[in-house]
Length: 165
Ligand SMILES: Cc1cc2nc3c(=O)[nH]c(=O)nc-3n(C[C@H](O)[C@H](O)[C@H](O)COP(=O)(O)OP(=O)(O)OC[C@H]3O[C@@H](n4cnc5c(N)ncnc54)[C@H](O)[C@@H]3O)c2cc1C
Image (cartoon, rainbow, N blue to C red; front, side, top):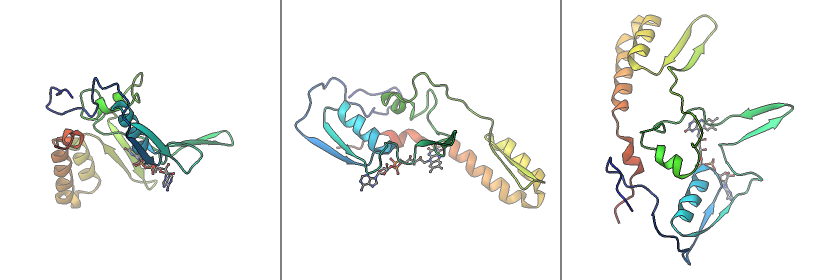
């Protein structure tokens, strides 16, 4: 198992092509079960994934009805762009190859028809905009945006480390 430059050990064991006698049974073919199955296979385990639905994907599924595609699931992935902690995991799983990662300046618009809250990804811009909308709430808005700024410095690679044996 090799070390990556940021000190995070990848989940994949390299150079073990022998299939183990041990089998891992996985209940549920959502992204978690499918990813567990992929990593287990990459590490030489035989796997069986049991899914009660007729399709894999779990919550991360879309379907067609009367000419429309209902795609209720993932519209953002944090920490997954090139150079970010989860990118290698998505590459291992073959999910991001050939796909562009887009960093949107605006996350969403929330409106009551008269006023619109624009949720900017940049916390400084978000703070200015929210205070313009509601100056009386400035202390709470600053506290919220300070929390957002702190979170941008959170090292998410800790969530990708292999536990010590
Ligand atoms: C509307 C919506 C928007 C979302 N947006 C985002 C987003 O933008 N970004 C993001 O990161 N995440 C988002 N999520 C969350 C993300 O989709 C889920 O966290 C993720 O798909 C969960 O995967 P999972 O494998 O843990 O569970 P699930 O997807 O729930 O998979 C569990 C699977 O197990 C099966 N199962 C359960 N019990 C049994 C059993 N006894 N036997 C056999 N099979 C069983 C189920 O049928 C299901 O297929 C969103 C979710 C929803 C619903």
